[in-house]
Length: 494
Length: 92
Image (cartoon, rainbow over all chains, first blue to last red; front, side, top):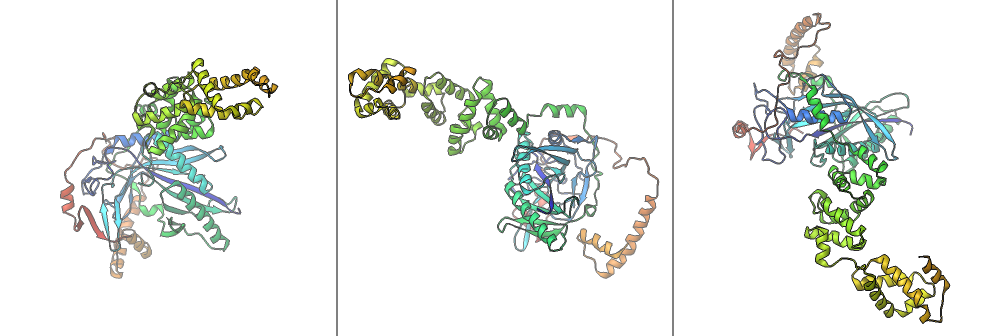
């Protein structure tokens, strides 16, 4: 490609809190319209905002996770604009001295390499109200006005749409681990605006456009890929890019001009006189540090390096913190990492997907799964019966040992008993026995199948196979026609 | 003040000005700006900007919901309503 492209993201996350950021109205999605409003968030004269400690704490957690420098003196500013979603006619946000600046995020690219994405700043602000438009009027609901919103701004270090998509995915995963937001893009608790510009190599940034209305990470990729291409076409024709905000239209897969972008001085930012500056104390910072958890990319790396899990398994397990926590607690009570990982990403996940239940809400508590593994590893049940027991754990919400006992699933490992069943099966299939004797080892599988069918899979398969082979091998005296030394050799090797 | 600048400011504030109002305001705003420019002459080198005079820092509150029970009273003062929504002219 002839041009170099630059992408920067502005990500807004709705912080989880009981109250709004500057008043004690409930921060609760889905309440009756305009029920969570008060003179502060409706901008009545004389009402004074006061800062929510929980929002501060969560903002600092994100700053810490992004390795930001925490400003000594944090200041709130007014961003002045006139639009009905903000009844005060200004938004309280941060401009000059936000909570965090100069951080970075280690983005993992598709080839596994790490790209350091610089974070310009992390600032706390209030969300606007919701507007519902129809043809001739707009309806307003101010329940969301004043709820805590954290904005994270990256430097234009991302290159293409795919980078941005990965960033949104990995960033979302991180903030969910931090438990600061639910990160639901469809419901708007994580919103992303994307800035992009292109230029000839070495010429620095070009004129940027901003794309809004991106409510999935895939759309972020599509919209940016589209924009970068559009910029190229305009410049190729000798045209100029206008700095503007554009709206992504998923139906047509195109972006449309929304409004020319205000310059930041058009917002007439000035320090919020109603809120005193905020100083982050060492005590608070210590609390923030104590609350930090192992972040998803670090955890994934640990699973791969220390536990030798495959990339896919590690990525799957670390996808959600609760899944990874479940996995860790299973290991902590003594289960094997590989066995745990393959069951979790295999049969356990299959059942959960089918039944549409989350692991942490399912009857699959780690203690039960550990017990199931022990039953299998001690050869009390076969792997296949184990899968059946797993189903039963889900359906009956009981411990595996109880299920095995109730259903009589314990494996028959008594050689006398197995021998008896083998004899029955061999007697029922003389032609197959002959074939095996003649060297067709594959037919042993058929006999095993018959045996399992006859016993409902309850026979120790290794023992059964050995007995079948030995029986046929030792039984050669009874059959003089076809002595095959190969079988004897094979058998005696065992 | 340049008239174009005045009109831009008015547009940002969503104010509609006719010719007469614009001419009148241009003179008044220019006088105000002159006063500001006088202030701008003061030497503030090395001084930290004062953004508020209470000097009290870290005025925060815990994250516990309160109910002002004002919601209905506030809604009653709204010019037009539809159920619990506030209705305004279309502003897309």
